[in-house]
Image (tube, rainbow, N blue to C red; front, side):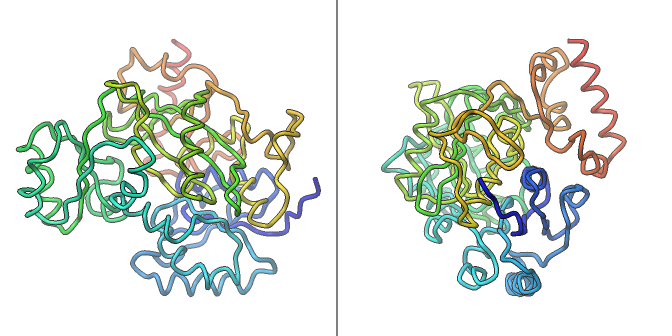
Length: 405
């Protein structure tokens, strides 16, 4: 397969997700530019040429002008990769302008509008998927109107990710309310800040009942790659993000996730989080994220290079047909996009060390693994993270505990 590598890539968001995308592209031989509103760890990667850009939410006009100016100086139309929620609305709204200078495969504007707003997302899927009972609250007055209809325990989270992360909490996805009084105590101050929330029936089951389907769909809606993973540890526990996740073989999950995205004519990269309901054993849809996910480097390590598949599709180059794959892969080949290694773990060891006791550490971290930011052939991003020496001490503790176990 002859591939044209002359198209540069632009990765929006340079934290752990963007770093994983940049490494996957850089190792394939693609020139990568990283853009962010501040200097994140990806700027220190040997695969990234970083630059600061205007904030896409606070300064959308300046952000788009910056992209157009950048696009004009490139010899080739570069390929866009979105790894942060902050960049999705601005890029989607201005896709007609940007397509003159960049190449990309994004979900439709309608789908993005419905997924950025979590309550709209609920209505998008409510007739085709199993979902928890969901309510929207926009003001303190809604607590009296809707509060009596909520089933407890309930989960409270932001309707829009950007406002929640910037004004409430960047790591905690939401809060658990066990009764009506606790719902009022938690939701009222959030609503008073003008931040709408959604309240959902809390799906029972341990954190390990959280699974994720990750897929890439062509410009015409054909599924070109699928990957599934299981959360082994969350930070914070019961309401946070994956601190340790593991690739898994779960055919029912793959079929369900792929079918749902095909039903809504999805294109581009995306991941759906599900939780296995302990009451009925069914996978319940939690949310769809229309971008690269934090643990993208796990899929790459397991044999599926999603960013490279995205690069080939966006530049209208042929992605290898998985039916004809011989099982071999090379630097310029994404490999079999439906077969991947299982039992491999992705670990953010700073978060993990804060979520698990020492006795469980070895069993959770043993086996094949990759790290959220550290790579032997690209060590500077991890070394330049805030609190570097604390990070080194935690890492040494991690190595010691793993060997001891």
